[in-house]
Length: 281
Image (cartoon, rainbow, N blue to C red; front, side, top):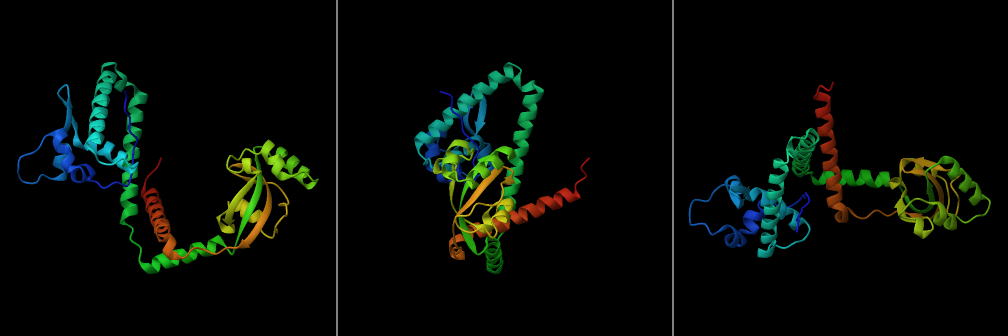
């Protein structure tokens, strides 16, 4: 069996070395009492050796974090599976090198892209985690977002199609008496609402895509939006089904999301500053 693992985020950096310390002994061998090595030294040690080539604990740590992020508990079986995965991977990498696959320019570029992407993601996470907004900053961001979301929320029924002529034809048919719910089943390409006859869930007006939010201003319950609306998804034929006042959840319920919004803005500002300072030819 070939075992593969995906990239993960959000697991402590010493998951293998601390959480699984008691589990490593039967797999890697118990260590005699000695001065505590650094995390870097531990990660550099061999987790398993394949034909004389060590596969480091750092590699095992990566795979274990991915499993932990998916809810897999730390057990001897987990470590055995990781060990087997590293053995399989080492053998396949060796055979790929023997076949000269590692000298292919596109393969080298793919490896470089993965390296750059991993480092870029690590930098982003370091910036996001360093942002610790004050209570006043959290309250200000919360109030700003509540204001943006607006005073009402709506349930919309929609037909989403790719071409403007089709959207206008369907819009005319609805104005002529055809039911949008039936037309949505036949024509809409929106996978989220098609089976419901085009009916979506409740959304605050400010949370709608900008062209749609603009188009539904002043449109009351049961009314068809006067003309099809274009977004990056296609052409929307829209009808306002229901309207009610929007009541935002209290800050205590959305504090993590508000903090994340502030952190994301800081990240974007840092990236824009880097772009301004960079010489791009």
